[in-house]
Image 1: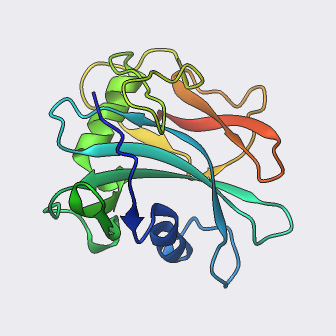
Image 2: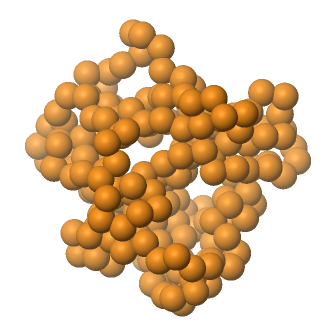
Length: 191
């Protein structure tokens, strides 16, 4: 099980994401720097205990209507080989673990393997900020196929509507900056 250290990261996760997010093709904000707040998320455990895995939901408050984004993150003790340059969100100094390479999790094979395990019912979502604590607010509907399969990760989140649910999917909640709770489709087995 992953241990959550109560320490600092410099720069912070939100600072790293704020610089990286506007460069993404799916970014829905304007030309300025986004103002991000944590809105929700969960973690998955790496069976080898080497890679930190977090599915962070952030809300950009710069627009009249806030926009929620899902940013799957991996935290590594060394650079990940064989991934495109844009996969690296940045590096940060962790108060306990030292330098961490922070990656966009959709490019990290450990993150995607654990997301597949979650969709097959073989992994348990963990609380975002508490060690060894399952997160019952994250639900998986259906069961994914054995082996490797394509996953659709929804980057720009919208509240879940009836009829929007594919057969196998992950649903989780977040909180808008005004305190209103929302729930949406985070990922699904690609058709």
